[in-house]
Image (cartoon, rainbow, N blue to C red; front, side):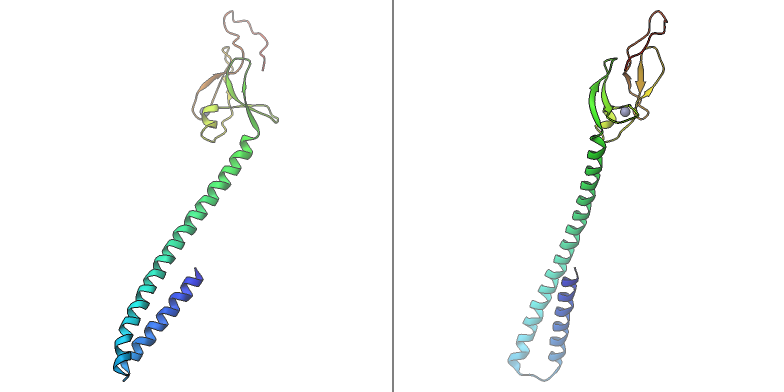
Length: 153
Ligand SMILES: [Zn+2]
């Protein structure tokens, strides 16, 4: 960016100098060449200006892409702590590999968010997602006779 700025300033100086030269008494041939030189300098200045805009756009893109990569790396690190598994109740959810053991909502997981499923403490063995509210049959249903049986993970 500074290089372009310096080149731009250099061109401006050359243009200004030529314009000053036009004010002096100089040979006719030189006089007719100066406007052409000025025109070319002006066109070069325009190109530099466009180049600077393009560079700015590319730098913005680069910054955005770096942020995207950082976000992806972060998500990959989180994702690595889970594996898809089927629970005793038949729900297919993400299971944590480290303690405390927990399950994560697969719907929210696909949107790169970890939502820990919460035990609704109901006989059907359902756990729900605090975000999308989907209920998953994590534990084996103990419903029916009202008898409390041991639940299995
Ligand atoms: Zn969810």
